[in-house]
Image (cartoon, rainbow, N blue to C red; front, side):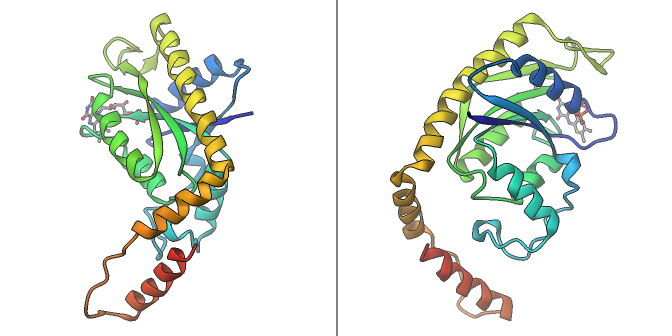
Length: 226
Ligand SMILES: Cc1cc2nc3c(=O)[nH]c(=O)nc-3n(C[C@H](O)[C@H](O)[C@H](O)COP(=O)(O)O)c2cc1C
């Protein structure tokens, strides 16, 4: 069964994200074509990215990164519940995404956003990020308005039309998530990894400023041999 994580994308005290994520979970949990769970980034207590080695290498040194990695690796698809902060997603969600790389790869994502303009600018930014972490993002998205979907700009009140859009988005997400799960499980994934390795060329300064740059090259060469 396909496993879908509904990622709570705000850690702000008094956040709306938790109520929106629960609404989506309650709508989706009875579906028979996937399993859903709420993944609250607040629970993982991630600091600002504090791993010395880029996540592309998968060499995690911190317990919080390993716990977060195990959770995301266990999922096949994601529904990002995102607020709009300054025409983008929250720093907390971007930071949580940045912690990992391979755990996201070759999986699918959909979005539920909210803001004065339905959170669309947050989703547009997230779609750019998805490309870099090799996540296939579906077109259908849920756009909630702070003016009409939240009482007094605070308490979330669902409308039937949004319920339908959640399911439409989930239909696409499950279809793509299933296809990508098959891709990951097939020999094609190994070929894709080899192709990816050939195109990877870390930018290394001609004069190494410190020992860590040397260590980076060693790790990069090791990565290329995967
Ligand atoms: C730092 C910050 C920046 C914001 N910028 C925007 C914005 O650019 N566009 C918008 O529609 N809403 C903006 N808002 C309003 C948020 O969308 C709204 O407060 C929302 O409830 C935040 O989500 P959260 O409660 O889950 O943290 C901003 C809120 C904060 C805290």
